[in-house]
Length: 461
Image (tube, rainbow, N blue to C red; front, side, top):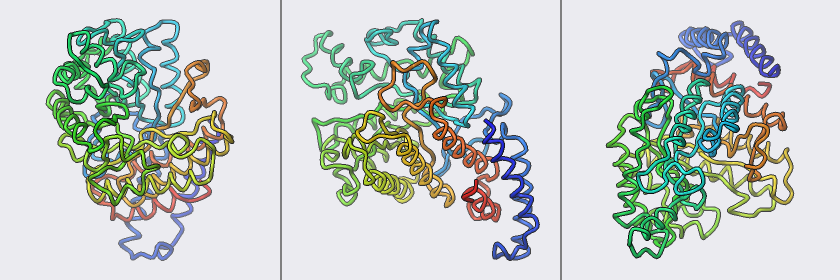
């Protein structure tokens, strides 16, 4: 889009102008000036090729994303994330009449610089089920997931693949309980999913990690296209507010996934609610009920094998459906609290893996949605410029044209939302520039970073 070309040109001009500034403008010495010139040269080289800035390189450079302290890294360079959710990709890919929409999603997301997509790698016992019964799969649906992974790689988009659902959509833990009862178990609660040994064995036998992709011939656990495995979408265990039952499940399943696939990162899929282990932090929860759902943000993420933290943001679901400015203050404090905890107590990155505003909310308008998205993005940037744990965010959710029937109210369609598209693209360009210029050897104290911050957060950009 032309507006992005203007931004890049403006950035180059700004860089050229900074060459003529004295080092005193940055309050530095002659050594500082040399470092700043080096940084300018590096940035100009990066800006000259936006594709490379975004990480669109040859396959030989398509490496695994890893965690290093509170950062994600690829080839020893930071990898800050601007991404999205499109949960239904596998189901659409299973039908030739809708498979093209999968390609459209990745093509459009790539056009605005997004680099990570979170999607479902499960559909249990439902229409177009991947897993028809425990460890019994529909090969055609598995091939559809293969297509999703291969198509993501074409557009240099990495995938967070979720392995199960807390909710009944696409089967979820309720389907595992149905399978258990069909096998003769006497199960009375969906939360038995977390504790009954037979249901645990069903989950552990889910074979996605060892799948060989029929399009690429690469085993999933060897494929750098996969950013991370997610244990479950929004796990809750309301039958045990102490959190012990869910904690035990997380510990066992994180270990299980890591045993099968030690190369990829693992995250839990939590919404981020604080629990009994940190009563001093429950003040940040959106409501009192959040402390009673069996999750515990800090304790859950300390489980061995968990590489980064996940948090969701839904002020319109958790506080009030009516649009209000108080939602914005909640979003900021919610994010800052989790970034702080990820830095102080967890020593890991945190990704805000779902956030958005529903068009069904009373008082909704697109300007307010843009304000919410900008607020999330700015909080990420404030962490980025300090080398903090705020590692990125994923919009809920990103749709191509012609998929209105899947819209839950949160869908963002670029062709219908030019202002939102511009905000997404600007965030992508800022993070891509940062990823390209700095590397971990910078140790966050280099003089390049000083110049970079002047550029990344310059209002006119």
